[in-house]
Length: 127
Image (cartoon, rainbow, N blue to C red; front, top):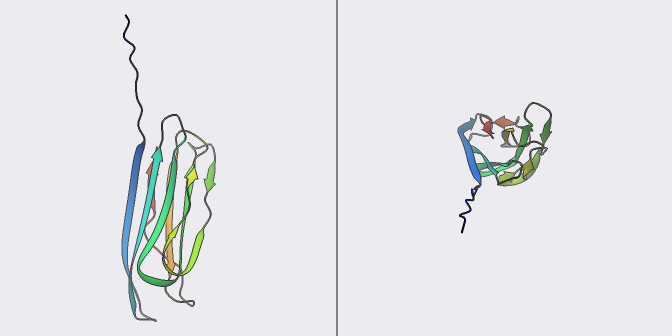
């Protein structure tokens, strides 16, 4: 009888988070904005990631996107996912085109319709 050895691969799950407290002098609002990038690399598959932007209260507009540098050969993007009058936006999942990739999450909000887009520090993951 021979023994067979098998290597069982598991998902590699990573995340990165950034939080900023923003005070708007015009509207006199103070809002905490949080950016979160979560990724995974399932066995035998390409890595994937999702960006999430959240705020401590509803804001006029909030958005998130994730980009991927596909091992230096190409780039891809989820595109901005923008929602109004809410406190959470998700980019949707982006799957890299290669087995090695660097993901960058972008997280922005507008407190009022006349505000500029305010960003947190970007988030990133590398597989």
